[in-house]
Length: 221
Image 1 (cartoon, rainbow, N blue to C red):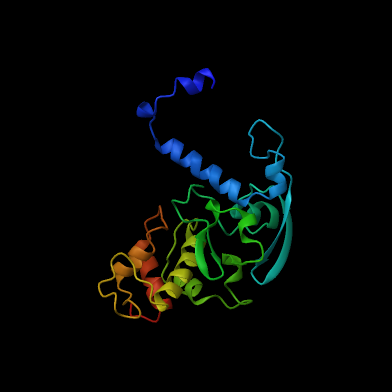
Image 2 (spheres, rainbow, N blue to C red):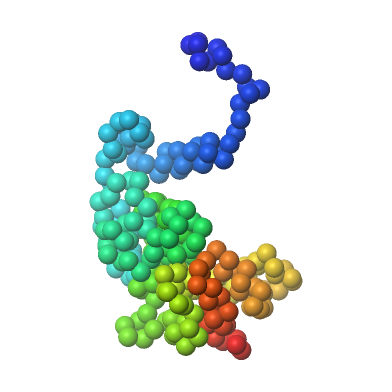
């Protein structure tokens, strides 16, 4: 037993927010890196970078084979490797929602997930919602209701709203859902605001965003 171990006092050990984040990040990398990379000690910050990996992503109906550093986030893969810049990098901490995309129809913050975690899965970005020149109903509604000002958050808002409407139709409740026995909650303004609370608009266009979502859902605005 070395000197550091012999002096360790479990009663003085303190768990901080930093240690929790660092431990969680390490666990995530350990669970996603290829075995070969782990064998080479790729997670050692003082060692060489991990070897690249190949990932197949189905993005907006097209297959893309990418050779990436396994630490590449899905957001960076979209923006830096495929020039799909509609998904925005806002906070890069999963707090603003500007990077929201759809994975097999479910909304996700692409800055918080690694590209290698979605090998073979279907990814839909804001660029893939329209059908040719025909805008998605949510895109049309956002235009008609001025659901944006600077527009930076808009792609994430629309992708999130797409996923949110699907969740509502499937009967998934929210924190403010009053009757959990109903197959689908009534999409009141309060429901929409709660379900979209992960998407921040610094321009505060929230009333117009709610109106746009209600129009796309076929509700009176």
